Amino acid sequence: MRKLKNEELARLDVDGYKQAKKTPIIIVLDNVRSLNNIGSVFRTADAFLIEKVYLCGITAVPPHKDIHKTALGATESVDWEYHESTVDLTKKLKQEGFKTLAVEQAEKSTMLNLFEANSNNKYVLIFGNEVKGVSQEVVDVCDGVIEIPQSGTKHSLNISVCAGVVIWDFWSKLKK
Image (cartoon, rainbow, N blue to C red; front, side, top):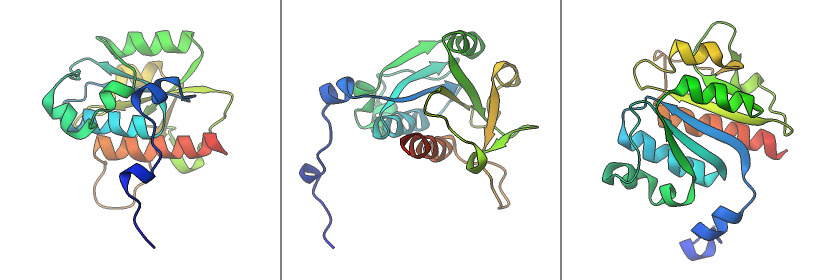
């Protein structure tokens, strides 16, 4: 087995990405404070052809060297927009026909492995602050809550790891 070289991977360039059919997922970052986490989410969004990333509240916006360090240029390929209020944005996206899902630990949440993604739906996946998670006000206006099953001693995952797990899971279910 031989590792492939970058030029053998047949990756899209930025123009190709912009023109490619996107996965019907929008990512919302609700008050994410770490610039490295923001950059990592952009890089994951690029990998799975995510439609758009919304940055809300205190979430920093590109260009910034610490976002760029982990995004590796994905802020140029992935469409993004800033909104002050995650609640207002979530309500707007619901009105546009998206199914809004907070990724959080909550009563009546649906475990990720049990969630059945429907390719006829468009999804908004909302990820929260590193300490406080998705705000209760945002959870209150969402259509549902998705939770990653965990069995260890820690009660949460890093937001960029969480985003990677959830985005890949949705992408793989929607591609079936």
